[in-house]
Length: 109
Image 1 (cartoon, one colour):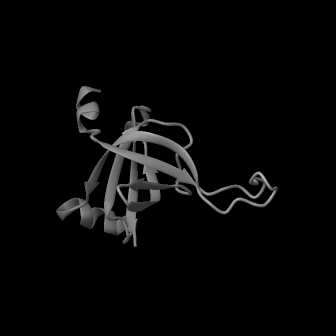
Image 2 (cartoon, one colour):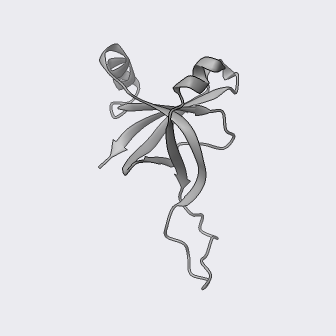
């Protein structure tokens, strides 16, 4: 676990879209994303062999974001870091150990 902790050097926020039943204080439907968590992460642009391997699965994957395992993080969410937004395309729970989640993402423009 020490190796994972040392790599988590970026503070990121994970957001989810509002549900249809969620409303603001005036009873109007929410149209802004809802912050799920503010956590430490490792942001790793894919390059070389990793990038080409990811392209075989999903041609748009450009970045891997590693976080500690957290229940409920899924591909309907997105991540923000210093003005950058990353759309989560899929998640990986290595060896199903519930120690970390790898968020395979593409950067939003």
